[in-house]
Image (cartoon, rainbow, N blue to C red):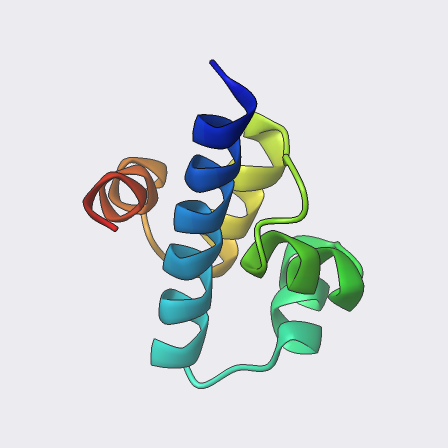
Amino acid sequence: MPPKKQLALRKRLGRAVRKLRKDLDISQEELGARASLDRTYISDIERGKRNPSLDIIAGIAKSLKVELSQLFRMTESQ
């Protein structure tokens, strides 16, 4: 995938994570604690600055109380 498309995908994932986190009314710090990740890593994901592994994405989805497939659908629809 070309770099521009990768960046767009990471930004869409970040927007989906941020929306779900805000819907739960939890901070980046709280989400990080639930997913065993640092707050700054969550921040970087939400800003599209990280390219998290599938295992990390699955852990975030579980911490946000959604199925992985739902998070991916949200990412696709962004």
